[in-house]
Image (cartoon, rainbow over all chains, first blue to last red; front, side, top):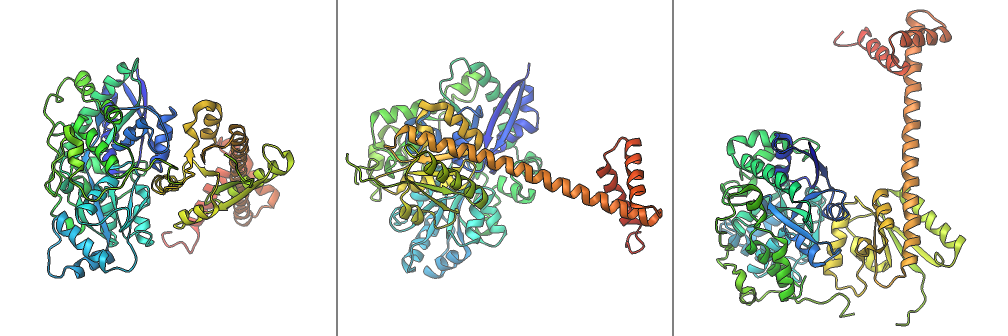
Length: 386
Length: 211
């Protein structure tokens, strides 16, 4: 019997595992008819998932955590049984801002995130008006990565710049129209901006936080009675993820992803993005680890991944720190399900999360970790300062 | 808490001016006709653009109505998240007590953000009008595209008739009869046959470069 499973996605290179599972027969081999539903925004994807219009979704890592905690717009319990990608996003600035950065630190290289960040801080000080930077959603690694990078370079993300959320497919247009001076977004949109001569890529997620979690598979809680359905899906996704990670498969994957029903972007750009061969100034820097779909136990949602997100939410005032919230967050990211359903991989220890500035994250001591940062934003309960 | 009486402010964010006008009219009609729950509404409409936040702050709406698929929702929600507004609008889905309305809204493609403390019945009546007007707009769209299609078909049939009249020296009526009979014999629609005929005639034109 064929089981129908529907998954919502936002057009990005990191929805590759879902596309491969559908297009290359990995889902079918597990008896699943995988239907993919394209979404125009993260809010729309979240609502369709929460209200049961789709069975699961290609979600920003922090999104199911925020939904489960009831932070932001909705309260709906979610579970993450699988990580769809690690890395794969980047920070791009407009060519004008890139020129200002070079002018601000003449003769110096902008090769590392620290160098580029220092140049950005200097360029922003020389400006009259604050810069506007785009990211994709309040609960996204893009928001947290961008904030971390800015703060590490002495720029307060809530005071010295203006951050706006823009859905990924509209990011390049916003740069072209001059609504933003730069952005943090998933591929292929950085490469598209670079290829169009609109921007330069100045840092990648793989440089800022090597091997950090990006997109996850989000399903509604509770799972009772649905594990029979989840097992075949996770097996199909694990097989598809392994296939996607093979460099030899990139041309075919790029060709599938570039189709109108998925990304609608030229295959050459998608292929370059998959290989970390980013166009523009970061061409040589992103390295082999730019985007991971499978290797290094990438698919296992680790407790450290979840706690890192919790720590960022606390740091930027989205959440009050509490033992309850911490425990909830750990319940969302389930490291056990993949092992139960697929049978391998999960036993490997998670890699330590070390940022580009050398600061290591320790999930056992979130308070100690947060105490290291001068730049933070205090949590204010909604309406309490009215 | 005592509240100074002011009209309930509704903000429609829609790049589609026709749909916004239909909805605005619906809300106004409901407001004047029924009084009571609907009464005393102030309806504003803005197109979504870069100036979203200052406009919203200026209008200070109680209810924001926006197309579910509008990509600006991500921008809106982030604004609500960071702006420490006392009256932070929340997506209607938070309150699941009336799931029938929520389902109807999703089906119609409506999403709404509502500030806390509004009476539930009042919100529901606004949503009901919005849902029915979104459906009305969809019907209008379908009718328009059907009308456009019919017009296009008539045009191509006229062109085919003109070709037959000229090349076979037929009257208009005979040209149409020939077209209809041939279509019936070939089990095709007249418009489809007419389209092939017009395309073939274009190829056979003496001026055609590839001919």
